[in-house]
Length: 304
Image (cartoon, rainbow, N blue to C red):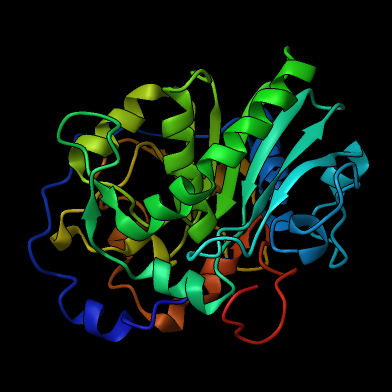
């Protein structure tokens, strides 16, 4: 997700920061690390046009080699969506029989319409809870595909009633996934799991608290990735909790000791505390266990 407003936003990034919440931090377990490394591969697969515009039943594959475990599992596309909305929301529903999972994956930014969505820093009321507000672009990205996605999810679950529902995404896709998971939990899928990699802030304090309380949230940041620092705290946006802060360098293998789990909607012990959101730090944005956006097409299309 590239933000054309980086320079302007960075200039005011230090204004009106909220006080940090009470913090608790821990390392992750090996079994957790394996899960984190696995689900990001579904987020990576969402960047491939051969996946988000695939035929139903097609096996998911990543020609750049960044979703090997998904390929090994033999996961197939149940439903795909792209190029049908003003926000150019794209992604797919997959059925993974090997891991007994139904996966809803959202693509990160690729088209001009996606990037306009990225910087629509205006509040909207998503109707999820009292006093709750979401970022307009991210909520619209979900709302415009919600009816069709929910129809297909219902069918996928009916065919595989014992499977868990996992919602994933990277960057813009993580923001949309966060709001989608929150919405789905209130619409018949209370145990849906969220794996959000490099998500920007999506909510005001009330909505972030509501989503956090739902549980099953895994929100990842990486070193000084600038994207999770936007929209600014000064604008009233905060993150859901907890934060899984990856401290290993770009292009490096992530070990259990490289991830710190930090509680709180505003904390400076993780990504937020690494400084202003600067475009020069953008390389940290694309490396989350794998190069997540390796499958993205060339150029800057109006829509993908």
